[in-house]
Length: 414
Image (cartoon, rainbow, N blue to C red; front, side, top):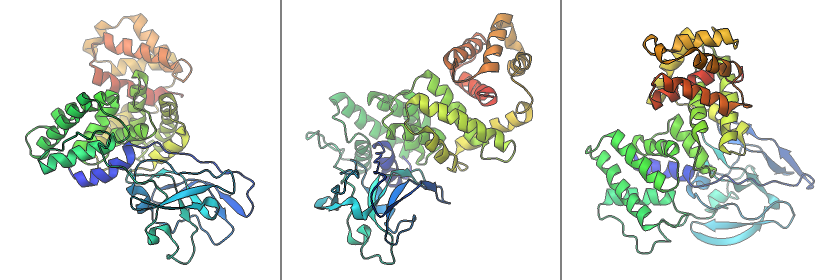
């Protein structure tokens, strides 16, 4: 597991927590509502109420303190003038303060992918001595230690393995694990350490990770994203989106979501280059909103905007997908309309000659019609037509997912 300490801080704040939304009444005296916006570095600042004193949208409160703790929600609400919030110094509860003189900052993702939990800060002014961070205070509930529900848990005597066990323990800190899950955790930690020592290859470790996360109730496709992150030590698009969903309490996705996620990832990569830029931006917006809505995310449009600000250019996944984008630009984008005659020509283009004997005219026409009308309305039906078509071509599952992802980018909601 590369850069384990970095991962411990980074995935810790991503995987465990569901973003909390707090809403403020719109009639409080001497307060002005500031709409959410994106900073130049890609950080999203959610909407908040600003008091009548000197205050700006750029917080003087240090976000580093808000990202250190990673569980629990902000206490108190803001629907009345008597709302209060707890203050902590490290792991120690200090006191309660009224929220009337504080600014609420909703949870958001930084450019590096770390999640900053919802919190309160003091109003911005010309002084730092009244800032919570300067005083060593935070409104974030301290993170409990791993395995507090498992008093008989024994860390490995190998310090590297025990560090990995602690890292995995933080991911499941809100769960009471069965003996089988604890055994799977310890086994997975050992294999991650094997990878660090060069004793086991990446694919094998990722498969161990998928098995471990599936035992924790996470679907294999999302587990693969997390397991890949654990090995590589940096986020790619799949692991990032997996973390987004799990952070929002979505641990399982269905077969439709898998195809949509891969199409969305491909569109996001296409939106990062100049050629056909506007086309891919539109594709990413349409596919991303539908994917997140289908998966159960409560704020799909906002999340898609945030996703499009991320930079994935250093990942191997991005480089590989750019080759697919280059092929799309050269051979498909702008060359096929949604008429059935054009969608049939498209299928002829993507179907290898030696496999066309497996496809009858009825299959070809059926999926051609689906491509010409691909939308939310009959998505399940149209997707199944594609799966049937490529299955008859004897296309493998991974290849089929990539091909249908390409089909969706070209034709979905055209």
